[in-house]
Image 1: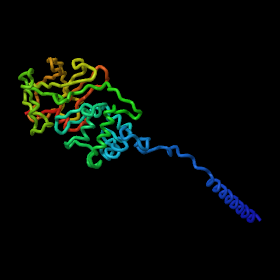
Image 2: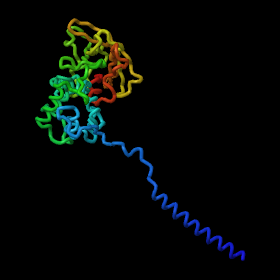
Image 3: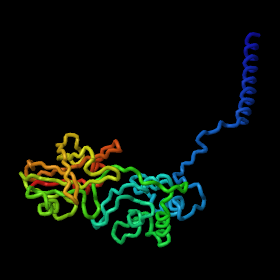
Image 4: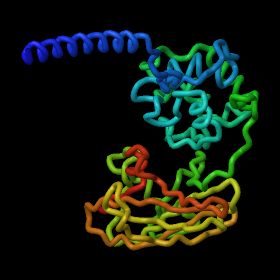
Length: 322
């Protein structure tokens, strides 16, 4: 009897368990799954909201040109500026953004990528019309822009380079810079012969292997003078701050560099800052140098060339002792 009761009890429990599982499974299948909070996220970096934006607007230029021809892998996809991944990044890295590139012919120089109402001095315009190897877009983005596409870019610039909301930007209070305007090319290095006229004593034209951006050659034991051509949009040249040159034997490490203070020189038509130091390194030594300055309105100190710039800038800002 005891055996029968236990056996019967086990059968009942098994039956009840099956009923519970059946109803619980039915109930679970009928439940609405919880909402995924990430379902509404748009992972497309093209933030153009209009389906057919005005082709002469920044939204239209991004949708029809920059996003399809320039936002390609390892190019203007955020790898380096200008950043053409979105309308916002396109605009913010073009308008009144400084140019950090030397043109192929070493003659044409540009301060900003885009200047409202001014295609002639906008580097973006130069890159799409130039006949030099500097043209854009590169083959990765397909063939060169059509005359219509170039005209769309030009029209946007000449209409004030308006932002997504139709606003015309104001010129910013930019950081100071080393002048590269065709007449002055960042700096001039002189030997100890004379200062004025300083062109009689320029030594930085003597470049290693004759390559324009290679280190210049300087004699051992010379007293080297380097004139830095500087400028700013709000502070007079003579009122610029810091004004130091650092010398290092390492291309990208200036943490233990020799520091030489610069002096302001007003030579009438020419104003510049100059450092003087003896060349005490042994022949064959490769010395890199950088210049540091700041204006009276920005807290940041400008370093040029920076470590993230292309290597030819750093080679150009160097010399070899002979």
